[in-house]
Length: 460
Image (tube, rainbow, N blue to C red):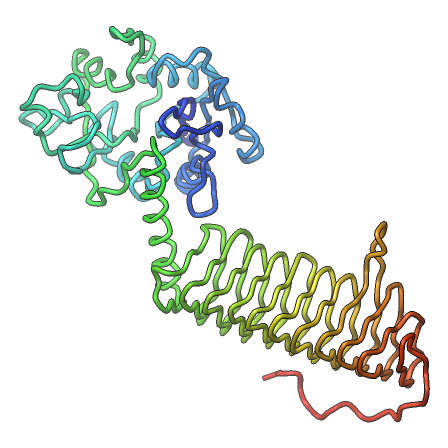
């Protein structure tokens, strides 16, 4: 049995240039903390993560997946010391290790695999990720020997003019032989600043006659770290572009892709269409054939097949198939719209279930309610669900007709096939098959029952 590689994540940095009380690795890009993007990449290559935190970044522990090993570097004395702390916290780990920074969310799993494979193929103890990212940066410069192996890494601030002009930079991801790494890290010494640099491992290996190799990535974005809000914005832009491209390759259409934002956690089925200016966040899932937008926000919302959502905000809502929402509707947490519901402009639903085929076309509020099938909710209808102390439920039966400007003072029930007249203020239950009118409303006559319309609720 081959031991899973160790995935060491360096997340103890203070992030002072972020000018923030939030630890750097907890700043979000594409809807997720930076460190979680890094952990996703390690999980994809089967690595067992260990995250190195400091007292200042301890808050990051709360977002880490259950079971993630954490060690504390106290005090933080550089990247080499952080790796030493990680290895001390995992004394039984064997085989190989990755070392990555918690603020580099753009490293791809396939790149980590290539890094590990290159190390093994070349018989090296250490492989580092490099790239040609220009010479105007703070990355260490990679100095190669004649045979192509890495001879040393020169920190940019300590490099000569010639070395600063070298085209290849160290991007800060490593694959290492774990047994060698344990021994080598113990031999690192602090420099004049009092820090222990991980990059000094190259000199340790070369001095010991070991090979160090570099995998040069063609994607210069992979090495982007985040030290400022400007760099955070740049990383977010790349992540969101990658997310849209992934969905498009899986069959999703984006109209004006750059204008729409999709979080990393969002799931989109083939044949979904995302129109311009739309924002999809959190645990949102959208099924096949649905059109979102233009200018809609979906947050932690589940949407069925063949729905249409236009210029609306949906938060914590669930839509079955063939539902129409918008424009300018608002679904708040707990809204559940069954198959074939139509909800029009300036309607709001909260903590309520609307039965199949119900129509609520404009200027209405339904909160804390159970609405039956095939109900017509007239313009200006309001469920008065809050008495100043508690929330109360409203129940409306199948085939009911709620007239325009009806006020329903909960707790209350409007029966099956019942109706209210325009402007009714309903303070008492309305029996089945009864028309109620007035302020307060009272029943004035019975309504005939009619067979439901011969329609299939949008079934195909």
